[in-house]
Length: 358
Image (tube, rainbow, N blue to C red; front, side):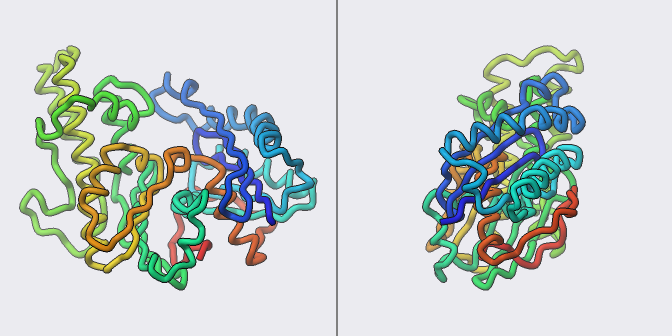
């Protein structure tokens, strides 16, 4: 049995978890910074770093206590190395390095993007990774920082089919919620406001889908763009309020929130299903914070091609957490692929050719 201590600090969640053998989550603790950043309408990197500094030690203690283990029982420390906000990442990475050095434990730097995908295989799902009928696997990773389609083969090789060329889906929802005066974080706020609304009340654009009658280039077949949807919402609100900034009537707000949310979801689902059919995938994994969205889950399930399995992590493993980091890191531990103590954080997603958990 191997216990991996996972540490996550890529954005505004301070998280520590203990994961057994890459599968069973023994404990998972998260300290949220939503209240700190809500007054600014988004995450402030320097504030996030300070909050991580204050929270890491108590969150570590809580995770160890809940798991009923001590650091001497831990086999290795896995920590998010990137991508993410550099000030926030450096706090968690430095903390992990100190724990590893002080307790003579192996250190494993984990790619946050891969960890999100792995979240769908926690708590009893690890055996799916060893099944031949799982592949080809298509991962739709949607969060505030990522919107991407990754094709994964049985041998662990991977190819990024497409990504966002401007705003990520989560960022578009956050900005949309801000325009609508719904607060932060935007995804849950828009989902709540959309309840009882008509998703077809307003016709928002579907960029890079060919829906506007423009030919779609091969280069953008699986790429995403959400800036146009956001701009369309801005202009629609100006028209509805005649530039006066007056509040929308409750039903009108519900309709426009539902239509905006559905436009984002529709683009995600169209691209995912097109890629699934083109590459004859056997499994679709939806991961990242936006995968918590109930409308996205419904639409993906509704449009799923025959003989294709849909895997979506539990909501607690979709948003940023350390369980996905510890679980993903276990595979590197098993292979003896450790990181040196001088590893550095990285902000952007590097070119992907393989995944570490197959």
